[in-house]
Length: 409
Image (cartoon, rainbow, N blue to C red):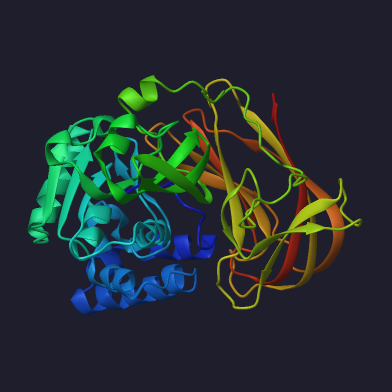
């Protein structure tokens, strides 16, 4: 990916549907229209989400993301979502690119190593901020394409190498900063060795579907770590994937912390879930199960308010999923067809192409706690799912508890 999960939490199903409907029109827009859409993206996906570094924001405004996505997806280029780029990889959502870049604290004199070139977008954003970017892509087809796009965009301080990023780039080391846009189970030792003392590394680490974004600082030859936020990236392939110990079970998908009884982490993030927006873990005796539930609140129509969790699934052996949850709403108002509190499951094939989505809801107005359930068919070629809960652009307050997912015949 620069890559995050197949598709980051949708900014609202309505936005995605609208983008698909308008695809032919948007692909032919002129430079001024693309610039306008970048400005909207920066405001909505970056500034409103807490990104404040002016240099990072300027680079996000300058970098034409639509050139780094497949032509048939350019209508969605400036939505805050990850998009498939082929070869089982994705381009990260704009927020994730901006967030990782800001955490890296790029300086004009820096030499930066990126692991996971993907489409080349993250490297392009960095190129405006540092002296040199060295980026490694393990997939030959993606690497060659990124080279062509970066050349066409005149990003002359970016050097692309095709190879296994687990090993780093010893010939160009040491690096002031390292950014990793795919997830190994543990930090590769060669990257630690190739980071300058005093340097920074931003990397997602952990199990396949349960990762944490870390900021590492190298001090006196050792790494000091700071957990940033839960996240979901595609795996680091090659040597890193071969060494992975914990593997997901696609025949037995299980949600983590589905009853929200685990305490939030030090940053206030709900454990087991990621891409948290306008969500809060609530402790209250009125919870329908246990003592805790998650609550979403949004005052501005169309703004993001959600959580998500990814799972492996084998559509060849699992024909149906039964999903249920408790929901309570207060003063919820939706202005568009696909807005409103709901639980959404999106299905993806082995190449992380979306196969469609199903949902429970929406639930508008004022409703006491009530359990809802539905059995959803699973596409035979589904290999991954993303489960999302939230307001999906509606205003008001919605609470969710006890989300159950089970395999049925």
